[in-house]
Length: 57
Image 1 (cartoon, rainbow, N blue to C red):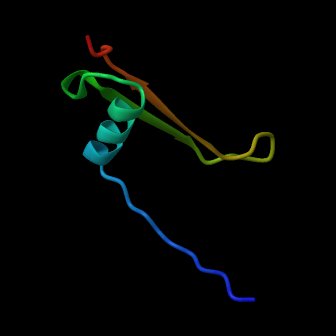
Image 2 (image 1 turned 60 degrees about the horizontal axis):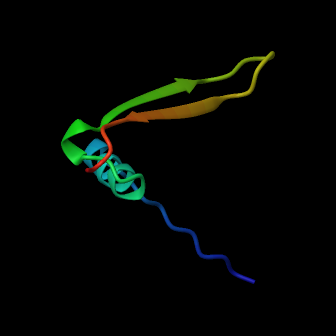
């Protein structure tokens, strides 16, 4: 059976908007930091996204 695949690309602003909406944050206060580790023989690869911002009043 055929499988359908999609590819979505997010800009920094796209991610900020999605995170701000999901967690009720003020968009202009959202800060993003993305950390990526390629991995080696001891530890697998991983990516972590940190988001910080002020809650909406």
